[in-house]
Image (cartoon, rainbow, N blue to C red):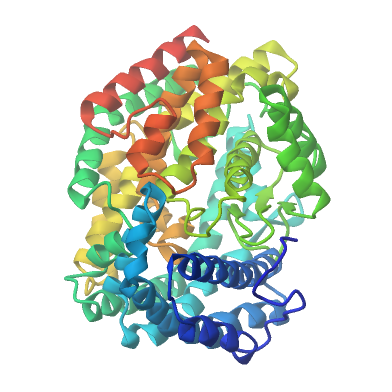
Length: 564
C-alpha cells in the first residue's frame, strides 16, 4: 500500500460523505505560491487514486461473479450515488487549477499535457450530463450479466460459451458445426434484449453529446477521450487502407485454408481448426500452468517483466479461468494507489487464451513501469499507447514460446497462427470502428437499418471466400459479441493503430533485441508525460496508419510467415 499523506489510511468509502470532506478541503484551500500548487496537485492525485482503486475493486468483484447481487449492488451504488457527486466538484477543481497564476511555473511536456487534458475535461463537462452518465454506467453493466449467463450443453455438460468455443478447433467437422450452431443459437436467445439495451445506450449517449454542444456522441467522444493526435478523418483513412491492403490478404489466407482442408465451401465453423488437420494446440493445462509459463516467458525477455507478474500473483491479482456467472472478455484493470493491476480473463485451454494473458501481461507491465510517476495524470495512459504495450508483448515474446510448445512443429504452427490472426484482426477492428461511426452519426436508426449497415460493413471487411449461406441470422448479430460497443464506446480503433505499432516494435526487436526491448520499455515508462507521437518515437517507431505504412508493415508480416 502506498503511503498516504492526505487521505487517512483507514478510509472506507461507504457513502459520499466519507470522501466529501477531502474534496471540499482542496476546493477551498488557497493556492498562494508554486509550492502550495504542487502540494495541491499531489493531494488531489492521491485522493483520486484512492477513489479509483475503490471503484476498481467493485468492478473486479462484480465481473468475477455477476450472479452475486451484493457485488453487483456495490458497483451500482458507486456509479449511481458516488460518481455523480464527484463529477461537479471535480469540474470545480479543474477550474480552480486553471485559474491559478502559478501554473505557468509548471514547465515541461508532462504539465503541458496535464493542463491540456484538464481544459478538455472542462470543455465536455455539463451538469445535466451527470445523471445521464450515471444511468449509462448502470445500463452498460447489464451487458456482462446477460452474456455471463449464456451456457450451452456440450457432451452432456453445461459449459460457458468460451469453453464451448474450444470445440471449434476440433478436427471433426460435424462436431464443429454442431457447436457453432449451439453457440450462435444461444446468442440469438438474447439478441432482442441486447438490441433493446443497445438502443437505450445509443440514445443516452447521443443526448450527452448534444448537451455538451457537439453534433453527435462521436464528436463528443473524440474530445472526451483526448484524441489530440488524430482525427475522425484519419480513422476513415485507416478503414480505406485496411479494405484495400489487408482484405486481399485475408482472402488469400481463407483460400489457402479452404484448399488445405480440402473443402468445396469454407464455412464459419472451419475458421479455427488447424488447416493442416492437426488437433488443436494445447499450450497449457489450467490457469496456474498458464500463469507460470507466462512468467517464465517474461523472464526470458527480462527478469523485471517476470517479477511484475510474480508480485501480482502474491497480491492475488489474477482471475483467469472461465466459469458460469463470470462476465465475458478479459482485461487488465490498473490499481491507481497500489500500482499493481488486476488481470481478469476467461481461459479454457486454447492458444487464444495464451495470447490473451501475454496481451494483458503487457498492460500489467505498463502499469508497473508507470506506478511511481508523481501524479495520476502522468499515469493516465492513452489507449493508443496502452494497446501498443500489450500487442507488442504478444510479438516480442514469440522467440520464447518454446516454453508453451516444446515440439518444434507445434511452435511453428503457433507462430503462424498468431501472424495470420494479425491479418485477421485489422479488418475486424476497421469493421467495428466504422460501424460505431455510422451508429452515432445516425442515432435514430432502426434495428433493421442497423442490421443492414452491419451486413454491408461485414461484407466489405471480411473474406468473400467464406460461405454464409443459411446463416444470415447469425451473421446479422455477430456484432453483439463485441463488449466494447456496450461498455466502452469508440475504444476500438486503438487496437488497429497499436497493432501496426506492435509489428514495428517487433521488427525493431528482431533486428536488435537489446535495443528493441530497451526502446519498448522506455516508451512504456513515459506514461502520459509526452504526446503519443513522441512516445511512439521513443519506442523507435512511427505513429502512422497510412496506406503506405500499412503496406510496408504487412509486407514484413508476410515475409515472416513465409519464413515459417
